[in-house]
Amino acid sequence: MFRETILDIFANNWPMILIFTTIIVSIRVTQLLYHKESFHFYKEILSLGFVIYILCLFYVVTFQDVSWSSSNFVPFTEMFRYRLGTNMFYRNVIGNMIMFVPYGFFVSYYLKPKKGYIIFLLSFIASATIETTQMQIGRVFDIDDILLNLCGGMLGYLLYEFIIYIKAHLPQMLKKEVFYNIIMVIAICVIIAYLCYSPIGG
Image (tube, rainbow, N blue to C red; front, side):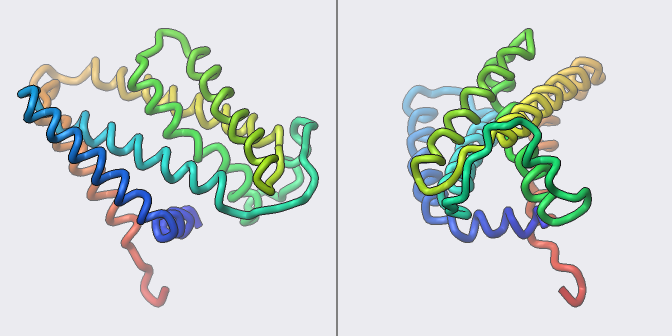
């Protein structure tokens, strides 16, 4: 289900992703060459990944499922309305959490906060802004979406902290940039393989 959702997002959002990516990459490459700055592959890929994530997030929260149904201002009303294991549960509950995991991770990567409350606050600001905006564009405000987004943002923060912990305990020979670049290439290949995988008979 999540694979199909991601593919659908890219299928409908590829022109904007292509345009923004081309502009940003060309400017960044020019900046590196003009100022003779060092090139760090994994860092540049992370930055590009954040841009693509924001573009996809914009598409998800503004162009999908236009609805004129009533808003929900009572916590836990909507999230407990779906049965565990159903498509609606995965889409509306798990999906809203997963959607903000990258946000929590990327913000943690850039800010490197010592306390998690900073990520909590920034996730709240982002989610509340999204929900408030949705009321003005034919969608609804749902307090449960904010709660689930906050959970996702904090999961992203915990993921970042876990990676930092692992990184700190790596052997010295693995604390080199070439190792991080290899890990990044492997991660990209895994993601592409996952998105391109088609079950036999599917």
